[in-house]
Length: 175
Image (cartoon, rainbow, N blue to C red; front, side, top):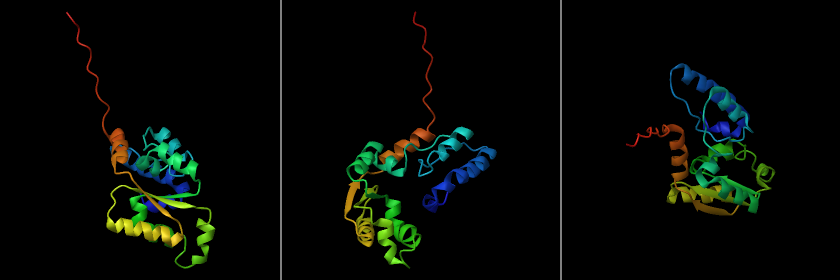
């Protein structure tokens, strides 16, 4: 699925349905590698309709950072803008260009005026990503907080989707 669907979450459910139906028709086992991602339950309706499971949470931030920690961040400071490694790498394209800020920088306050901080959920941080995250925060005028998360949340969530459930062995009769 194209990552830019996140900029138009109202399209996600229908696109997932179409792809899932194609894969199911091909005999493939299908799981959904999206959290709700702004579909407001529409993706869950597709999953129920087609008997599919999806990643847990309201968004990928829950998967990487843990739902309770993300809820705490938003509770402490509702104006929190969150980045993943993907968003750090693609910020110029997926945010700046997609929102037209490269052509109309005066829109910065319209889009980001309500934000008070940027948190980067750093899955695999390195010097280049640190530089890009700092540049992204500076570009929209927010202080940056780096929260190392690793990939364990994603790995665990994916494993629960793709690993078969453990088979219980019948109890053997005792003599």
